[in-house]
Image (tube, rainbow, N blue to C red):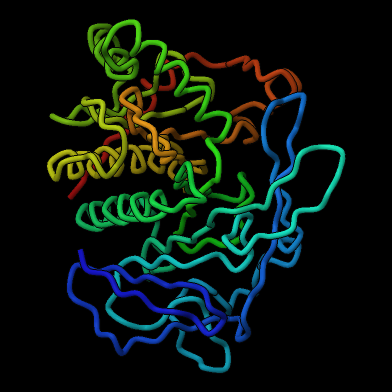
Length: 362
């Protein structure tokens, strides 16, 4: 993997990645020509025991741009610059123009609850220059490169003093609120370990301390002993499955068999197998109803808080939206207010539907 670091006119960083070396003559365009000074802050929620981020500048972020303007497409018109340049790059990463978290955060307001500057980082990951593609349509070599990019960003962002958890994700489809359809994801680098990750890690730590083994590693073995009927992909190094405990219809996990803490810890063979599992799941999603399948894709991996995390097991979780007419259910009071999910479908049935979708990785 080769990368080129550039700086936009407004001071934001742009990193271009490719399989081949990139010319240093590439420019770094920006829709915004002037330096930015974003500011955000955190407030402590005493009843939930968690931080809430406040970023008023996001009220002015891009929403439903006109069809003729794609801010993630290579810039061709100097009078209407976009976020990425023309050139032979494969993946681009840049700092979000309207970040929730920023290293520039300062002077949080004083109020009746504890506050902190909203330190951290928010980055946009442009998966490809092709605006008509999708993550699942990319060739395997491109997915392997993208996994390398995610690993490199985890390592670099996680080394910062103001970052304790690096969280790559993708929102896909209007059903989850997406208004810009160029294939892309984001990375949030939090100054704390987020509540869901913290809860998962606590369970994994308790299991590791009691058994000396990883919880997810043992769960994958149990799923395999149960007959693998919920497996969508079975590789030498990686498994994709609808877990027996799925809360969402068509929820899928992708995880290495070995309890690697983060993407950085995957071997080349594991990363290649991970790419095959990822492409298999995405093609099955899109083939299920023969239409682009909406989802939220998130990475869970070890915190970067300076502590050892032998319990952590990197994996992807896919959450299809509940709100999809005639297919899924609404996420309502019990789920949203109490955090107790009522599944109207059985994981085995949804796994059988996805297993039946024939895909080709060629």
